[in-house]
Image 1 (cartoon, rainbow, N blue to C red):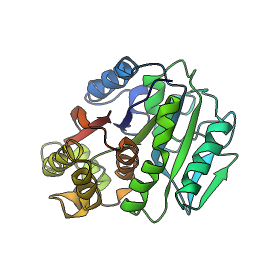
Image 2 (cartoon, rainbow, N blue to C red):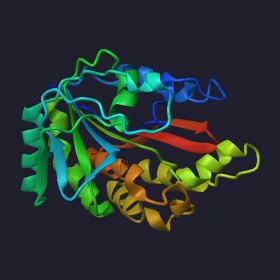
Image 3 (spheres, rainbow, N blue to C red):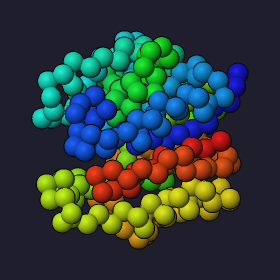
Length: 270
């Protein structure tokens, strides 16, 4: 079985790829990146394991639903965005393997037999894998949002890569919604200071020494602009999971997009 890389991808804003936006080309670069994503893989994944910034639970929790519905967990968007479909099958066997690996690493885990795919999963993956023909399991964040725990969870899940499982972290490297909404309402009058933190993340991910990468990501709050970019870190921590799963594999910045005045980046390991 081909060893898979691990990836952190921005998932945009709500159902952004499936509605009109101003400016009309705002999400084109990210859309094209996601559309081309399968071509960057060494083989078609056997399954997808996705950590989204939109699911938090007391313990790391996994979907066990064999046919997850969609959670339209966004508000105020056009009616047609609540009719989107992405009927990827679940994978209870993979979910059990995820729980076993995390349990062996000392983590408490739980399962959710009814939860569907939130928009951090189905919105970007509908673009990247429109045929919805790869079994997919979503893994929650842990509600304490402890960076070291999420990195260690990724390390525990690394063996899945040898089984053809593509581990995806779905979030945003800049997710200060107050500032973003202000910039949308007052174009040209709001300043988003996201570049210094993006530079820090790029330096961390591309560090040649895996221990340096780990240390930098665990101390992310000390970076310039950290709490401006991530007032609450739920959209950043999927990066820690996939970086942990990368083990010693090098990381690269695979996308840098400038949208709504902010920098949004993607990173690939291995």
